[in-house]
Length: 206
Ligand code: HEM
Picture 1 (tube, rainbow, N blue to C red):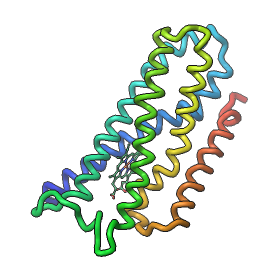
Picture 2: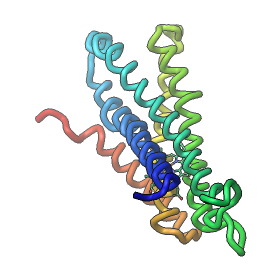
Picture 3: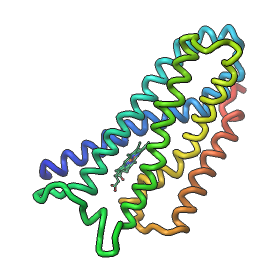
């Protein structure tokens, strides 16, 4: 049986990834499934479906984001600022003789994008959706509010591709270079662009 630190570390890592799946899974549901679906519904169906669907989906979405962030920050401390037996302080995974390590640069890149996304969820998307769902947005401002929420949601969807690269690269890639960063950005953005482009066509009833 591994020591307590290894067990806690793994459980926090697991919690982080399962919460991340919950968050990003809902983000992709909104962007790849729900946006094209809403365009094909009439007003009466929207009024029947959305008050049931949206509060539930937004609950998992925003709390998934919060737990991902909290577990992620804990994981950051456990991995880069704590050594079993020696206590808190920069570990060799954070700093080596040449300064900040490539591994740490990757996770800082991923965390920067992840934290921007978390901010968008809690301080842009959710406040707007809450007001829309409770009818607090004046009718003439509804289209602008919807547009702003969609823009923030689209930004998060595009950031999610490179962000995940930044999550995986520290332990499974390691070397940081300009080319690898371009690959992370290019591959991530391309995958999302392709998915959004396809989303209006795929899975339509025959
Ligand atoms: C919200 C801000 C986030 C923070 C602060 C954060 C932080 C971290 C940290 C510190 C690690 C460990 C890196 C290492 O081992 O060197 C990590 C790994 C990881 N994170 Fe995040 N993360 C965030 C968002 C996300 C999101 C949204 C997902 C989506 C699924 C995610 C998925 C992962 C995965 C899959 C790993 C790799 C686990 C492994 O290889 O063992 N993270 N994250």
